[in-house]
Length: 378
Image (cartoon, rainbow, N blue to C red; front, side, top):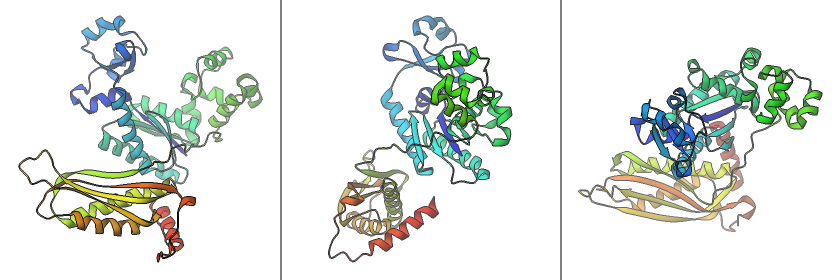
């Protein structure tokens, strides 16, 4: 099974995260120099504002319905997109970032009966951590997942998650217009309509030879995908990171070493997991702690320490021991800490690791244990 996670009205949702007074009000985002509408909230769609319409043509609608409008803020949208994708990749490592607001998830290792509850959990986590609402569609192929996402977004009774099981594909695909199918553009839409093909089900049922002759290999694959035959796998095309950081600002300030150690150990674990996901090793780690610089009435303490590993590693247990030893050296009692974190750098691939003649760790055995633990955790 594959899942498509799609952020609802993404640009408008980003604006609402930082301005909750915009909730339930019509919101539009305008292109550079406030030219055309490039994003709309559901409320803006309901009053008839079309995508791409020049702003000057809808001045009366904006005034009449008190539509809130914003110029594009791509720095904000890019940052929010990265937050969403980072959370998704932490929950489901097998991810393909398809666009700024869409990602495919490879769910094949999960049982069918568990997929819906997992997707509901993902949706709740994203809403809780970022404030961005998403719709999730699940199907046997990426094309079917895209179709399922259309249902999840359109019909509120599904609460943002719809799993397209094989036993209900006939009835669902018969409801989906051909223009909503992944890969059907204006030219292909006109061609299909010419032959009387108006729904996804009708396209699925065409002859494969006809599909290839009229729509080339791309169209043939589209038909196969609608039949449940995967032609497009999830592509893990992420660029390896040169440094990895996990840090948090505490909700309540921390004033003892035990609680701080617990947090730092967790951050180190997360960094090591990210490192292993890209099959890399780190030479250097840095741990830092800091008090709240905005609380002028409190004593301030900001400190960091750099750790150089004897051999480049991605071993969680080795990292935690050295990082916690460094934490003890920089920690001072009597302060209230607001933020802490761990940063890995000097990241290299396995073939570039320089071994140490005096290394006492059984790295082959440890690597086997780590792989087993990662598999269990997944």
